[in-house]
Length: 218
Image (tube, rainbow, N blue to C red; front, side):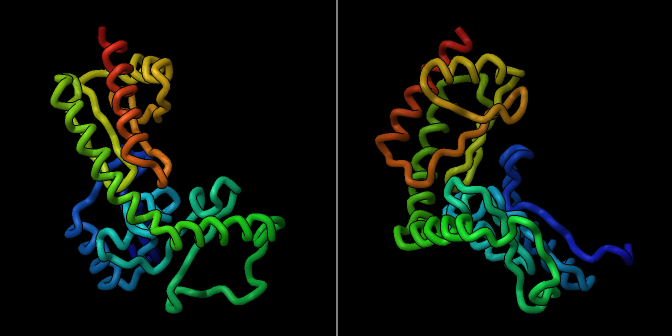
C-alpha cells in the first residue's frame, strides 16, 4: 500500500531452505521497487562475504540493492552487524543513531582484518570453485540414495532434501561419523562449510556424510 517504503529479501533464503531465486525474479523485484519509489533491501547476513561465490551475494545475480545488511562472516567469529547503503538511501547523519556497543574498536578491528583477508586471498573465488565441487559430490550421493529427492545450493551453502522426515535420524548418525550439519527441516539438512575448505576436506566430508546416511537408514 501507500505506506510501504521498502522490500527486504535474502538473495538466497538460508533458514528458509536454501531456496535460490531466478535472476528474472530478483530483477523483477528491483524494477517493481523502482517503479513504486521503494527501497530494495538485501539481507546478506548469511549470503554476504563470499558465501555464494562472490564477495556480496547480490553480485551473483547482478541485481544491486539500495541497502544491505551484514553480520556473521563480517567479524570472522567476533559478533558484529552492519549495513551498507547507497548515497540515495542514506538518511542518517553522524550522531543520529547510536548504541552502547556500536562501533566497538575490537569488533571493528576484527571485521577489518577478516574482510581484508577475504579480499586479499580471493576467498570468494575459492567458495565458488569448492562449492561447485561439493555440489557435484552431493549429487553423486543423490544418485546412490533414492530417498534424497533434491540437492540444491550455490557457492558454499547447500541443502539436501529427503522424501520423508529423516533429519532426526540423519543428524545424529552424521555427528557420530564426524560431520556437523544444520537440521534445516524435518526432511532437509543444510551444509555451510568454511569458505577456505579444500577439495581434500570436501572428499572426507562426503565420505563421512555417506557413512552417516548409510547408518541412519540401515
